Structures are given as structure tokens and as C-alpha cells.
Image (cartoon, rainbow, N blue to C red; front, top):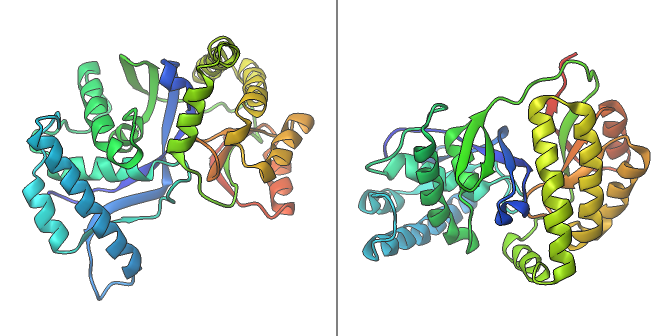
Length: 321
């Protein structure tokens, strides 16, 4: 194994589902959760059951990568022999990123394997050429499809680059800095735990099936995607008035038309945010469970509400006062 690097979770602030239809998307690395490839050590305090489970998963992943190479589909040269030898020595992915919570646990693993075992890897850098960014995205999409059946490649790309990524469309990806606005003293972005994992593949399948219906497709095309793009543009430009206005509309559209992606027991909390304007919730990833993403200009009130309802809240960003 070459080197030892830590790979962070990712949060897709905007673009879930819409990215399938080439909407804009905005993702950020989230250092609160992370993972790394390490060897099992009986003298270290770790969960050996999870280590063995991860080791078994890596064996299956290595077999998948070997199959891609045999079929000449891998798009990059992975040293599968070395990877498999290390797996036999007890290699596993030590990770605090919760599985099926919308935070890119498989993306971090894919990025870690690429970083350690790719012979002709593109080194991570904030100043990557657009062509290099797209090549990485293509490689990662193929590799991560082992875990989900279908992947955009964005999760492992974000884990690998470790900077915020603005996806303008399928052909234009850039790393950016999101401005920290100092005018909103109690503003914040946060995660709330719905209490259980979600499942990406069936929800994406449901969404694609619904999009075959003309009325539903029209809502996604004419409402959901434009609102997603407006949220991203206004946030990047630092226009918070337009941002929160667009965000509330986006949240309402998700509640109406993506209802199956929002756990039923959490819909009252979603509605409460829209009714009180104390916070606004949206999907974080495919939904169905895991975390939801929250935005607020009244973080003190939002934090109290979720604490009073015994719901875990994790701060992603606080406005500088």
C-alpha cells in the first residue's frame, strides 16, 4: 500500500437526483467523518468484527476491479495484485462515516483504494485541469458502481479532491470556495439524524420510474432543477436573501413530490421548519433515512427544537459572528 491518507465524508448541499438530469450540484468535504485504509492489529483497540466485515468487502471489491481489468474497462491501471496481497494481510477500511446515511462512505473507500493502488493516478490538487477532473469522475463512477449499481462519481471525487466542488453540468466541474457571510450572526448549516439508514438504489429507481410520467417529469424539469440551480448560484454569490427564498421553495417541492424519500416520522419536523421559518430541511443524498440537511438563520432556535425532540443535530457550518 502506497502511503497513508485520510479521506473525508462528503455532503451534497444541492443537486441530489437533479444531477441525473444534468442539473448543477454543489458538494463539500465534511471532516467530522473520515476513513482510511489500515491493517488489522490485534493490539489496537478497534472493532474487529467491523474490520473483518470490511476486509471481506474489500475482497469482493478487488475481484470486481480485476474483472474490469480483464474486460479492459477499468479506465485506469489498478495494482490489483498488491491490493489483494494487502487484503490477505488484514487490510480494511477504518471509517467513522456511517453507512447509508448520505455522506459518501463508499466514495471515501473508492478514493482511498485509487490513491493507494493506482499506477497512473492523477494526484489530488485544487488546481486540477478540467480534463483531469472529468477523467477522475469517470474512473470513480465506474469503480463506485460496485457499491450502488450506478454512480455519478461525484462522491469519491469529492473525497479525493478534498475541496468544495461546483458541478455546472456533466462536462464542467471546478473546485470553489464558498463565501463565509458575516452578516448572519446566528446562521448555520447542520445535519439531523432521522434514526436509521436509507437505501440509495431503490429510491433512485423509484425516482427514475416517476420521471417517466409526464406531469412528474415536468415538475422536476421546470421547478426542481431551476430551484436547485438558483440555490447554488445565490449561495456561491453570497446572495442570502435569494438563497433562503429559493431554498424554502425547494424544500416545499421535495416535501410534495419526493415524499417517499422523507421518512414518514420526520415529515412533521420538515413541515415545522417551513411553518415557523426557524430552519429549512432538504434531502441529504438519496434520502429514505440517514441524515437530512438543514439551513437556518436562527440556529439557537433550531438547535433547541431538535434537542427538545431528542433528535441528534451535527453542526456542519456556523456563520462567523
